[in-house]
Length: 221
Image (cartoon, rainbow, N blue to C red; front, side):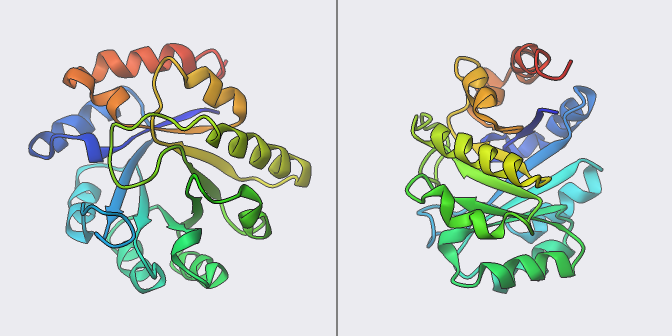
């Protein structure tokens, strides 16, 4: 099943509740929320208060992506404020096992993320314990970038390894996903698709979502 996850990094925060109503109407399962600390990536974004507010607005799955150094210090806060999935970067900690343990301790789904420069085999040892692996299709920190083609090879290799070992692990991809490359991304093996500019372009949310859904429906028959 291919799932679409709008990235609210591209949203108009003044109208977020209205946007969420559109997502619910269009039966989108996830909201992707990028948390940036200005250190691990050169930008800042949301905090726990924003997630608490979103949790009050919707029952949609809140897919929280921690782009922060030493994520273990932050996991408890984000688990307790309403996240359903918590993603941390492999590059941001030297204790991935402990990060996974913390996320599971609070009853949330665990996701491990890799940057475009990280080899996918680096996270193979953790795939038997996580629920999802996130492949960054761009260098994280800013929206509107183009998909780096070599990241699709990472998705292919991860899908091959996951399937060969019988793991029940979603592959999420974030960055540069457009209608023009969506089929390539899905064919590579990704099944959770984060959309930013592709959903918010010209602020025609329903029209843009339907464009993506026309492609996704081919795979969800």
